[in-house]
Image (cartoon, rainbow, N blue to C red; front, side, top):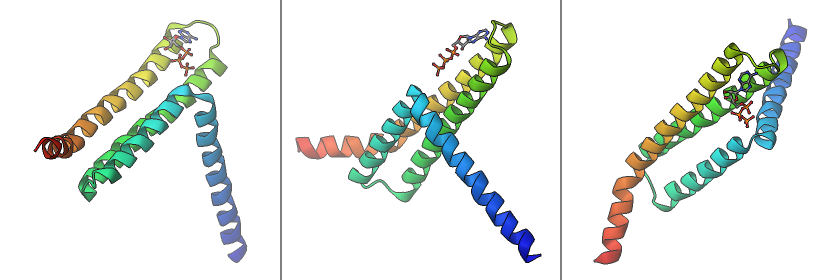
Length: 131
Ligand SMILES: Nc1ncnc2c1ncn2[C@@H]1O[C@H](COP(=O)(O)OP(=O)(O)OP(=O)(O)O)[C@@H](O)[C@H]1O
């Protein structure tokens, strides 16, 4: 019983390490992943500078998580397609374009979220500067 738990813990940490390695590998190989991560850091710094409320932070974190998750799944699908269908095939195109569509959709959501949470504070800041 104790042994099984120990094995379970070991398996959990192995899975965790594989997952962390997957994220690091996608970050290293995918330009989009780097760009989205950089933008996420900039947005979070701006959220701290503008002292956004907790609800806005949660919305931003949701949007960032969605974009990065979509990017990771897109990378996984691209790698799988390149492995199983290196030759041109309409289904390979469909799979890659659909996965890219998921990234685009999540990025549009992130843009709308950013406009929604920053609009008021930025307008207040500009108004304060002019008065
Ligand atoms: N095996 C294939 N069969 C048919 N069309 C493909 C195939 N591979 C890629 N394509 C088409 O080319 C586009 C670009 O594919 P590519 O593999 O270069 O991905 P990408 O979107 O440029 O991502 P990245 O640059 O991150 O690898 C795909 O979205 C798809 O429309």
